[in-house]
Image 1 (cartoon, helix red, strand yellow):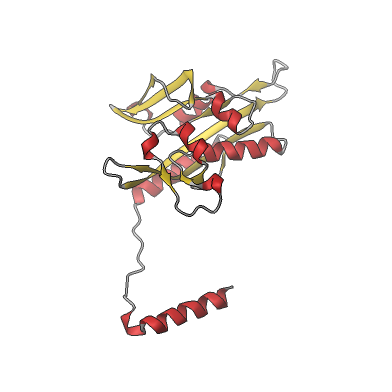
Image 2 (cartoon, rainbow, N blue to C red; image 1 turned 30 degrees about the horizontal axis):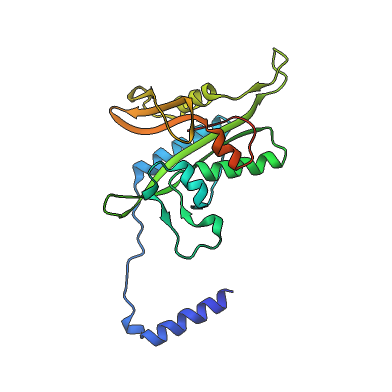
Length: 221
């Protein structure tokens, strides 16, 4: 109730003293280059048939341990609203898988979704680091009734082709084989910009998709 909130704020201000309330600027710092990049990423993903989603920043500990290779980096919530939301996410993958699972249960056969959101890690001195990242996944049938008469399942190469379309200045990026614990061995590629590792792409490990009761193949970037 807005009136109750306003009354509480007024009462707190009265107790503290109106003259003792510090004044702060409401100006917002905007990183124009980042916003332009995110706008471009959104536009390109949507042109490829993806839907943008927004998922929770809190995930279940058991899921967090499946997607975080450095267990000591997990950040626990002191007073979680529920036991399946007791860890800050270190990856967008759990939220995307949860969205995928919901849509499959609603009868969807073809899912292409992406998210731009914040993930949370710890530095060596236990300082919490927030990073803005992009993630996307595909699963299901690409198209029905094609010339071959067969339904084509979306796969790793479809997602890799989409990523190559999304990436600005594609020539600066390279793919190299690698291993990620939550991605399927032999179906994983690491993405580098110069010598810096900036991401990965691959087929989600069945150990993780089983956690969300997903039976179809899922590819994630």
